[in-house]
Amino acid sequence: MSDYSKTRALMQRGTEFLGTDYAILCGAMSWVSERNLVSAISNAGGFGVIACGAMTPDLLDTEIAATKALTDKPFGVNLITMHPQLMELIGVCEKHGVTHVVLAGGIPPKGSVEAIKAFGAKVIVFAPTLALAKKLLRSGGDALVIEGMEAGGHIGPVSTSVLAQEFLPELAEDHLVFVAGGIGRGEAIASYLEMGAVGVQLGTRFACATESIAHPDFKKAFFRAKARDAETSVQVDPRLPVIPVRALKNKGTEEFTKKQIEVAGKLDREEVDMMEAQLQIEHYWAGALRRAVIDGDVEGGSLMAGQSVGMVKAEEPVGDIMASLMSESEAALGGR
Ligand SMILES: Cc1cc2nc3c(=O)[nH]c(=O)nc-3n(C[C@H](O)[C@H](O)[C@H](O)COP(=O)(O)O)c2cc1C
Image 1 (cartoon, rainbow, N blue to C red):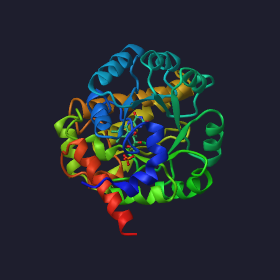
Image 2 (cartoon, protein in one colour):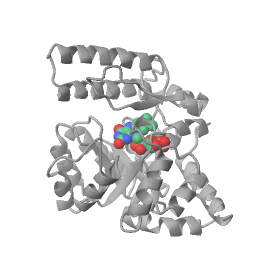
Image 3 (tube, helix red, strand yellow):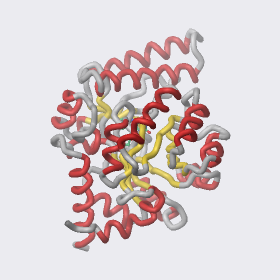
Image 4 (tube, protein in one colour):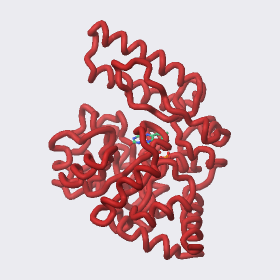
């Protein structure tokens, strides 16, 4: 077996930061990234991340403890910045000595980065623009994930290839940058590493691994889908800005349009303010994703998936996916 020496050399800053063999993160996926998938990723040499999503502090407490029982390798916890109990969730991470906290879904609120660093954990941030990335890295972010619109789930407007060209030349020398969105094979990993990334984050490629608890029908929908089936949601009302979500098109996509009209109506009638309106939209997504991932409702639920879904053909153990990614990257670099 190859020792993947060329790929590992380019990943070295990333693996040192994560404490792993490979600088490949499995991005947090609500309902999917729980103890089983997270521990499998970390046990296979990558970096698993628990998706806290809308969990209460008690549920997160249980999930971290259960994950620790399945792996002694490093893993992270992804917290959504708009969670009303963000500081309590950080407290739960502290209690368990979590080593890496990923702050997703918006600008970290005052005090959150400081609270994480105070117990010695590393903070991983997302930033949609270069200016914000610089600001977050100046104010305590230890590493950055740039995520293009090819990704599954909530997305920004710019593609991974353009973000990589914008961010990496400016930041890669002095900062740790991981690239996410649309990565399905190792050749793409090799090219982002050569551009200066220290590692990558994938979601879609791991969502249907053998160890993933996603419902068999959710997995089947992924195996059937092509890149073009992973579409972005549309915003129906300019007064209610919603973050676009990339998912496989189904009846649930239309339901979301109806949901937006309903919430926009509540805004008009001043029954809710903008913050509450956006929370209702996010609760809708959390519920719809749960219906698809856990209950297998592939018609009415949300099948969040990135464009790399076309490269997901069958259920494979995490270890095999990891080995494919690393050998494809190594072969690409070897051929240079
Ligand atoms: C089903 C699904 C659920 C996701 N849920 C979350 C989430 O809860 N929090 C988050 O920060 N990112 C979430 N993501 C994004 C992933 O963490 C990851 O960044 C993304 O999948 C990478 O792009 P890719 O899908 O093209 O590999 C989700 C992605 C998918 C496919």
